[in-house]
Each structure stands twice: as structure tokens, then as C-alpha cells.
Length: 174
Image (cartoon, rainbow, N blue to C red; front, side, top):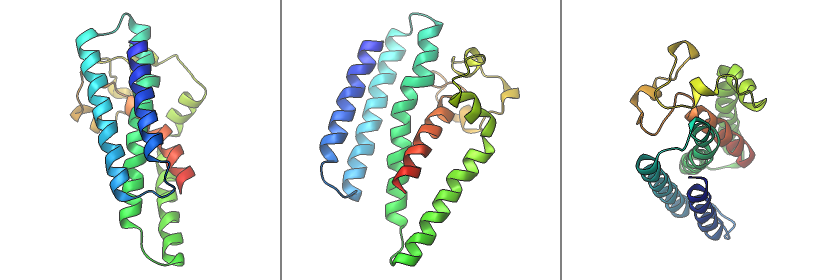
């Protein structure tokens, strides 16, 4: 699994870097990158569903660290797409608009502070509940989206990790 994931991620990052040689974030280029990330996720999902994991540790590592990196890229580029397509004209309106976007990121951080702390300190005590498929615990403040996700390729908190990583990237972009 590790080798396949690394190959797919390297291919994705190389392709994105090649596209980003240009300085601007054109809407068409962002759309292309989003499409590439979705293809990458689909390829990784197909591999996971076909091959599975060797052990619980590999499953936890994949959902806590590896899948989250790819999904974070999707969150980031989707956010850039929204920001760039909704951005107003003029220096003052743009500044106000970007400050509102930063406040949204701060609100997510504040609403998930306990999980941020747990993730940032690399706490592993709840990994067997948070990053193994089918092991969700309703008492761990699940997002409603989890129940609508593909439970064969999601855990209760892998998206939250991706959101943390993605939000960090978005904040730097803004």
C-alpha cells in the first residue's frame, strides 16, 4: 500500500507543480487541478478496496496521514476556486472579503479546538476509534457529513484532519 500511495502522490504533486509554474491561479488551471486530485483519490480508493490493508496500523496511517494529504489538496484548491470566482473588484472590497474568509477559518478552528489539539500533539490514544473504518463513536462529536460519506473509504475523522491541513494552506494563500 505504502509504495502505491507514494507513487500516486508523487505523480499528482509533479503534475500540479508543472501546472503551477505559471504565477497566477487561473480558474481553468484550478479546475484542472481539482479534476486531477479527484482522479487520484479515485485511483487510491480503487486500490484500497481491491487490496485492503495489511494490518490496523496501516489503515490508521492511511486515513490519518496519507488520504488526508490528498483530500487537503482538494479542500485547498476548491477553496481557492471559490475565493477567486467570488472575489470582488477594488482593493478595499477585496481586503474586506479576504478578512471574512479568514474569519471562517478561525471559526472552524475554534469549533474544533479539542481535535486540533489532539491532532497537533500527535496524540494516538483515540486512533483506533477515529481512523478505522466502521469504528465511529457518536460521543466523539461526529460531523453529519460522515454519515453521508462512503464508509468503505472514510473514517469518522479523516476529513477533519484533511480540513486542518487544507485550512492551513488556505490561510497561507489568503
